[in-house]
Length: 179
Image 1: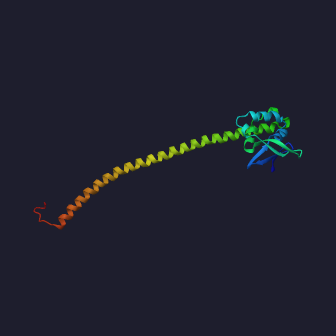
Image 2 (image 1 turned 30 degrees about the vertical axis):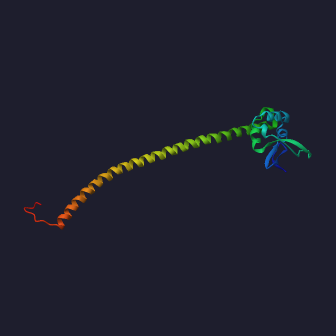
Image 3 (image 1 turned 135 degrees about the vertical axis):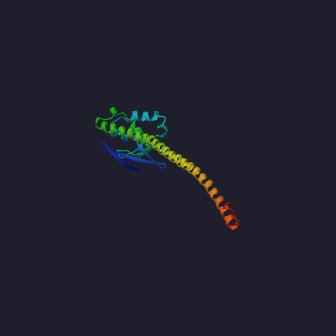
């Protein structure tokens, strides 16, 4: 089953499904941007990462006939396209290929610098939270001293109240105002 995903320079670029994975035939892309298929096929076969992903799939070619086509998984096609030298494509495709490569570089930068920026933001947030925690602990420490001082005062007052209540409940005569 094939599905058209885009049209480049009047060439339909299709996907092919095999074993639940989506593939893209390489030759139609080469034809669309005006580069020779064979050097790209060799480049794919020599690429340690992409070579194991290349597969041959029988599909309907542009001429309507079934042909074996060199295909890449769709998810790796974008990376392969970023390796194409704009100087080797047809003049009418050069600007589009250059813009595509620039966009790939921008996306990579945004992804990886975004990670670094997020890490910096998280570090700053963590520093602020740790500062808040330290301030709260310092306030608690100051309050503990105040609480301790007040507990001593409460003990003195309780002792004085106990003496006063004891005297009131057990009154003793007092000579000359002294007890």
